[in-house]
Length: 90
Image (cartoon, rainbow, N blue to C red):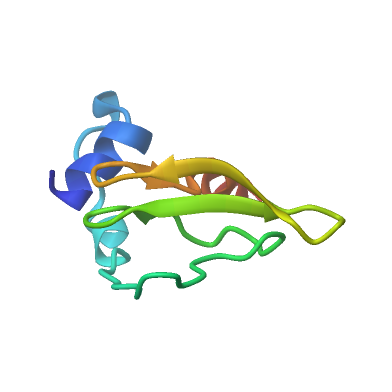
């Protein structure tokens, strides 16, 4: 699925018409090597992510230093969308 279609489906209700071109211009493709940290716990959400290939594991670090897996994202899914939308309202 085209990334613009994903954004429209997830965040932009059809009754508002087509997604503004300015929004589309903000989209970027990034490739992360396996094992990369994409966003760290506690960082402000300035973007959201769509998984085109590969898999993403979302974890938090517990006070004792161990990791807890919260979720997985696979191709066709997105993540960090809710914090991103709250950041837009701030």
